[in-house]
Image (cartoon, rainbow, N blue to C red):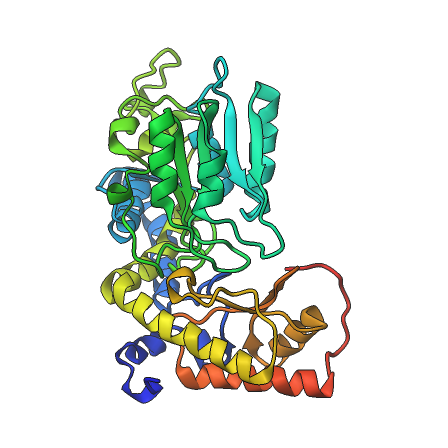
Length: 398
């Protein structure tokens, strides 16, 4: 085990204020805020206060593309191929609005292990004649690429699936899925929310049609920063039905009959963009870009291996895969009374979370130390032994 004192990434800890007051282990849900975000948002406020409406033409109008290019550099996309959206559900709706079920080609293939918001969105498309095929996750809560490949046929319109499963942190190899979809003429959409920033990959190299994700988690960019990658060759031809004036080449002509769309990623956008969220995203994206996803992944592998070893020593159950090539950044610990135990940990400034069927999720990032892993497991052991869960005042799962 590499001790924290010799960890070259430890120098970044001062950039994340919450690390000085909490053992923060839930970056797969919300990445720690970089201290630069406060300065960036102050810059936004100062710009609004002093430049007013002029800020749109000076920077704001093209800022979605500016942030999108930062994301593109991290996920291996070409400049101008990433658009920014409020969240992943919105981003995927934009992609789906480019498609139309015709003849027998009307099936969306997805999996029961995908985030529920996605499944809800796909099923809403049934009103347009789409047929949703949900691949079962089984008792292990994991769906492999083989399961997805078996569900793809000539009736498939698009395969929408996760690179990393949100509950178990299981990594799905997207290549066989993409290859099978190509052979039958179907499109592909990869949800990289749980892999962007912690698992190295390149969307251009994968030849995926669409990829969606967000800056909220491992990219440390805060909420309101979903993104959509569109394969450049596809970007030149698609015409989303979920669209708006930001997608137009000449939006300020205010011509309701002008349908000339932009040729870059902003072609996939719609209404007036949420500028403060872009300011919030930039510091985290810059840090991840400087650190590099490769070194982050290398440390993450060692941290998840350490966590699994500690879990085994305690005799606790975990649904997390044992193959290091199949584990992203999270180890789930499935103990009795996991929900109240997770809340007790949070009350002790050990920040984790809970998900039904997998238990407590512990998700260290590059800014965490190996000593903190020991601290989390010891704190959980103390809670379990004492059964001191505090008062549970709500059944809501957050």
